[in-house]
Structures are given as structure tokens and as C-alpha cells.
Image (cartoon, rainbow, N blue to C red; front, side):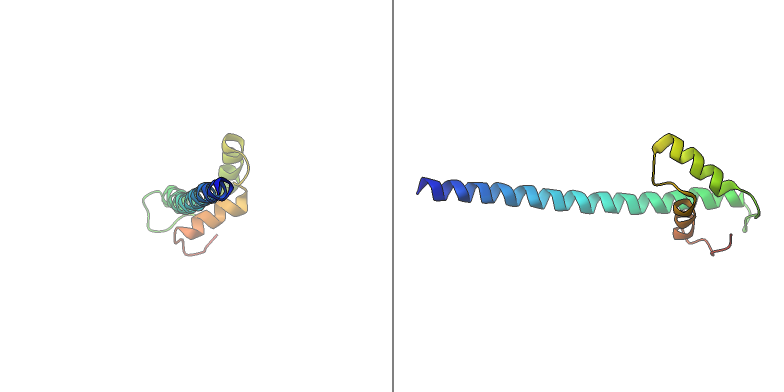
Length: 94
């Protein structure tokens, strides 16, 4: 009887831990999506410099990528930075 109650306790604790982990993953994913959108916004606004359209032909994304990787580690390759910019709603021009 005590053994059964103990296993019920372990199961209840396990359910609590699992639920907390799942909630944490959802919260992290939500924050990362928001951060990526905001990073894209910062890039687009910087590129446009207050104008409706940006000037093209610069190596800005490569430079941003390099500096972000140095400062924050992996996950900021040029392609990822480009995707963040596109995610903000940029019209897809390079």
C-alpha cells in the first residue's frame, strides 16, 4: 500500500515536471519568435534610414552576422539574419 502511494507521488511529481518543461519550451519559443521579428524590424529600419525603401548593395547583413556571432555566439549566420529581416515583413528584395 505504501509502495503504491509512493509511485503515485512519483507520477504526480513527474507530471508536474513534464508540464513545467512543456510550458517553458512554449514560452521560450514565443520569446524567440518575437525577438526574431524585432531583430528584423531593427535591421529594416536601419537599412531604410527613415526612407520608404532601403538602398541596396551593402554588406550590412554579413557585418551584422559577424558582429552578432562574436557577441552572442552561434545562430546568427548571414542566412539567419536575412531570414529575420524577411520575417519582419520585408518585401524580399536583397
